[in-house]
Every structure is written in structure tokens, then in C-alpha cells.
Length: 165
Image 1 (cartoon, helix red, strand yellow):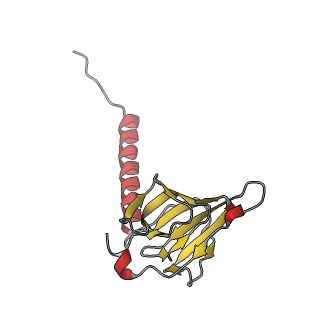
Image 2 (cartoon, one colour; image 1 turned 180 degrees about the horizontal axis):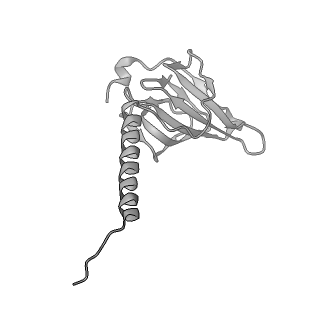
Image 3 (cartoon, rainbow, N blue to C red; image 1 turned 90 degrees about the horizontal axis):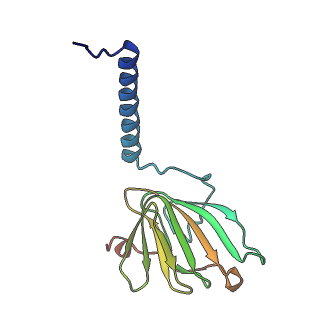
């Protein structure tokens, strides 16, 4: 009768794989526990307090110009941070790259946004977006038709509106 023998090298490889997997799982759970959002781009510049509640960081990727008439950038919202009400004359598209957040078009219910979601903000409609209370949010924003204008900032989103999920 032939016995299957496992070499010391094989046992060592399995042990290493198990430890590596545990280490990755522990690291992932720590990232979730710390509400970390995996950054794709540099954090950028702190957004102005007159347009945002909480800390919001913007990093421009494609400046508006007359050839592409599109503005593209990355925004990171710390947990609980959000934009004021605002509108875009030519509309806006959000691509959520990490985290959890909220989006609301005036008169409609708040929508939860997660990594992989794409949100369209129709032209000239008041809306706001930002991070959930416990998790940051990272999003790419695309503002097309910049020849019509870029953004019209309005009043802050109240805590009552923000918490009305």
C-alpha cells in the first residue's frame, strides 16, 4: 500500500499561505474599522467651507476647456461630509470609486451610493452628495457641457435633510 507523503516544503507553503491570508483579512478588517477609503488619486485641495459641510478634498484631473467642454476631477469626502445644494447647467456624472455616500436630487428620496455606482445629475436640477456618517466616499466627477457653465452653489444641506434616509 502506497502512502501519500507531504513534503516539509509543501507544509511550509500551506502554512505561509494561511498566515498571509489571515494577515490580509486582518488588514482588510482594520481598513473597514478605520473607515479608510482606498485612494486612487492624491487627496488634493481642501474644499471651501462655504460650499461644503465637513472636510472635502478635490483633485482636478481634466480642466475645463473649449475643446472637450468637460471638467473631470476626484473628490474625497470624509465621513459625514457633504456638499451644499448645487446645480450644474450642463449636468454632472458621478463615478463612485470607493466608500459609501448619499446623493439626493431635490424632491426625490436620498439614494445610497457605493463603489461601482454611476449617478447622473440632470442639467440644472438642485442636488447634493456626500459621505455616509460612518464611511468616507471617493468619487470621480464629470461635468460635461462646461460651455453652459460649471456649478451654481446654494445653501448648505441641513442635518435634518442629511439624516432623512
